[in-house]
Image (cartoon, rainbow, N blue to C red; front, side, top):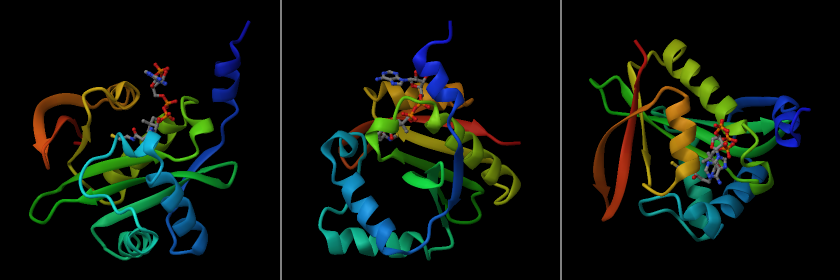
Length: 171
Ligand SMILES: CC(C)(COP(=O)(O)OP(=O)(O)OC[C@H]1O[C@@H](n2cnc3c(N)ncnc32)[C@H](O)[C@@H]1OP(=O)(O)O)[C@@H](O)C(=O)NCCC(=O)NCCS
């Protein structure tokens, strides 16, 4: 017998598409990144006020080093995934991912979105390696990245927060 969770995973139709500046994006991002359940896993000075979040959306969609994608489930945005390229001459970048609609976490959507982003990094931006910085107790995220071929390399402090660095070579 196929478990219910497995059926839900098989039924998911996941795409990633470049994020557009829109009212819907602003409203979704504000809701997602101010949610304490999601925010607890992020680090750095994240915006909290609506104007700050809207500014973040606008700069994320116009900065050529930042590649933001909506994660679409059956054509509806449920989160975002991104790469921020490091400054030249580095050919590397850092990944971020949020499944903002919490009811859709744990259904394999993160896996599908991450695999698509890694292909984009390799084939479109031609990066040679990617990294993710993850809080030590974020088991879901650690599992997600290690199962997609990222390996733990070191621990770092980011603005006073201990983070684990996972990396994947693309060449
Ligand atoms: C972390 C996150 C991106 C993972 O995406 P997801 O779609 O929920 O994850 P998936 O369903 O693809 O599952 C990834 C793995 O974690 C496992 N997992 C799911 N829920 C879990 C939990 N509560 N504890 C431990 N592992 C869990 C899954 O079983 C899966 O492993 P498997 O393939 O062996 O079954 C998503 O949950 C999220 O956005 N969380 C909040 C923000 C965040 O933590 N972002 C990452 C910051 S580095």
